[in-house]
Each structure stands twice: as structure tokens, then as C-alpha cells.
Image 1 (cartoon, rainbow, N blue to C red):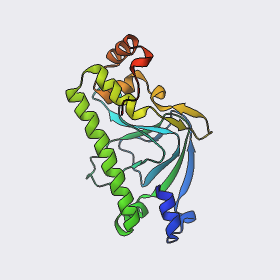
Image 2 (image 1 turned 45 degrees about the vertical axis):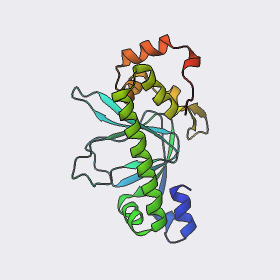
Image 3 (image 1 turned 135 degrees about the vertical axis):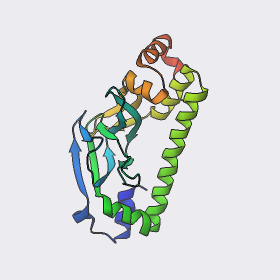
Image 4 (image 1 turned 60 degrees about the horizontal axis):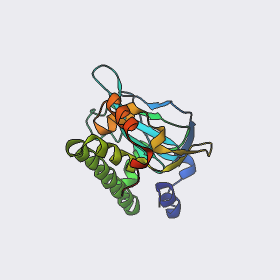
Length: 199
């Protein structure tokens, strides 16, 4: 059950007054590092990349999200949050006021359990990627990312996309700890049958 389903099932909240739905075109910033945000976003459809800027000002991607993932600044990091969120394909997003979101993840036991499960799932994925960067060879790293994103996503216009195929070589490189050039060389060497779902 996703967040909005949990909230609707309780009938305890004036959702029509609190929650907005927005549509964001492809390749658009949802927020940028340093920007004041007071919202948490839930992906209804589409895909979003999260990242920050490197020392040369370049985009560095560290996560790719799709429905029904949530993202945004919970403001628990004492001003250390320096993230951008950008659409990869046209997105339909649900927007929760930050104060409301923080209230329900503490006070509503069902929402709290949902939040904890999702946080642990995201941490586990991040830890697995970091482990593969430190322990796996380049082909194995690419396989890990392929497994993570070998799925179909719908955009806000109901068009289907293969999530892995949407990623640029630079984004794959960021997620695997390899350069764009290394990713390109590996993909050229591999036959299509070599990258397959292994989990």
C-alpha cells in the first residue's frame, strides 16, 4: 500500500486541502541545491534523478526513483542537505506539506511503519551499490545497476519506458563509480544477452 492509500483509508486527514498534484515536464528541475523547500514529493508516475554538484559544478547522480517513491528535504540534517531533483521523463507528482508529512510519520502508526520500511529499503539499496563499487569488477557493477533498473515505468502521459534505457552513460557511471568512458567501453564489449536479470 502506498502513502496516499494509507491516508485515504484512515479518513483522518483533509487530504483535498493539504495535498496538491503537479505535472512536471521531462528534464525539469523540481528543486536545486540550496533552494528552500517545504514539501515532500511522491512519484505517481514518471522517474526522477537525485544528485548534487561536483567540485567542477557538474551534475553527479546518486539515485534514480520511480513510483511510488518519495523524496525531498525532511530538514533533519542541520542545513547539510545539498541535493537536486530533476525529472527524467514527464512526471506526475503528489506534493505533501513538509510539516504535515513529518507529523504523520511520527503520530500515525501505519504511516510510521510505511516510512520505516521505505527508508530501510532505500538504505539497503544504497549499501548494496556502495558494496559493489568497492568489491565488484566493472561488469559486475554494471549488472547491479541493470538489475536495479530493469523495469518498466509509465510517464505522466501513460507512455511506457524501460528505466535502465533512460539512463545516460554518465548517470550509470555516477551510480557505479566508473567514468562515462568506461561505461561506454563496457557496453560496447557486452552482447545484449550478457546483461540480464540475475536476482
